[in-house]
Image (cartoon, rainbow over all chains, first blue to last red; front, side):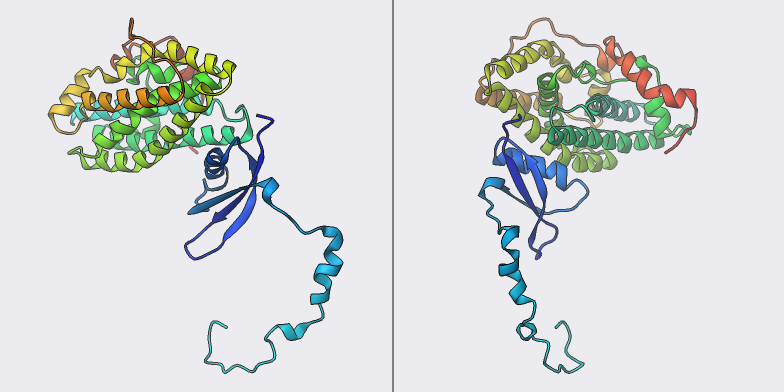
Amino acid sequence: MKNWPLWEIFIRSKQGLHHKHVGSLHAADEKMAIENARDVYTRRNEGISIWVVESKYIHASSPDESDSLFDPANDKVYRHPTFYNLPDELEHI
Amino acid sequence: MNQTLLNYILQIADNSLILGSRISEWCGHGPVLEQDIALTNIALDLIGQARSLFQYAAEVEGQGRTEDDLAYLRIAREYRNVLLVEQPNGHFGTTIARQFLFDAYHYPFYKALMNSKDETLAAIAEKSLKEVTYHLRFSSEWMIRLGDGTDESHEKVQNALYDLWPYTSELFVPSETDNSALEMGIGVDLSEVKNFWNEKVDEILKIATLEKPQDGWMQSGGKQGKHSEHLGFILAEMQYLQRTYPGQEW
């Protein structure tokens, strides 16, 4: 069992919401990963749908590069549509 | 009071209570964290079913006894669970084999109980069936993994099957209560349950490359209150608190 691969678990909590990463677990294959995820992550009514992805298939950005990747967005306020005056009657914006 | 109905509810409740208690022994001892939680979930499902049934039994009896009195304060001879569910956990393969043999009975049992003329029993059956559907999927899956796994896992689960086999036929031998309940339209026809069980067991054992044991000397007595030596120890642990500090509540 120590050879079981690691799986990343994504749970959708409600219809219409995105699947959200909730954690990881070990399982021998995808079937077992879904069953384990059901038991580990949805027993308190957290979900209506489960995705599992073997962790090795997740490719991540490197923390070392976060300066060049993310900092440039810091001073570009004009990319947010915050300069419009909206009428009060407008909701959900 | 309807004595047949009461006895029938207790017979169903005791199976869930004792198996739930048995599986809960795994809590904190599972082979890996994920299976530890899975087994504990199943234990909680079963104890939840037992609670609903004991609450109903207490109501039907109408003598002022509560669900706790029924679960905790009877003596071994008054329990009506089948012998299979009180058998020790053994290793993981034993627990899985016991679970599979019981789930393959539990599932069609509840399915049939949904047609009970007794509305409360039918409702409890409907709710429980969802849980048991998953139990059966879980234990079937593990029978296949262990049976069709390594030489060692195959041998272990095969031996567990041989050891537990003599406890399986009792599931389908109707007790007096089973017969009366069936006549009244509140009970389940165990011969139909047996058909499903046979098919399911054949199907899964085949995929799991396991041999179906031959029927030999079969054990019985649980439904009549004649239990194996194990039940006393389970009850000793389960009842200790209520008997030492009567009336304790959550």
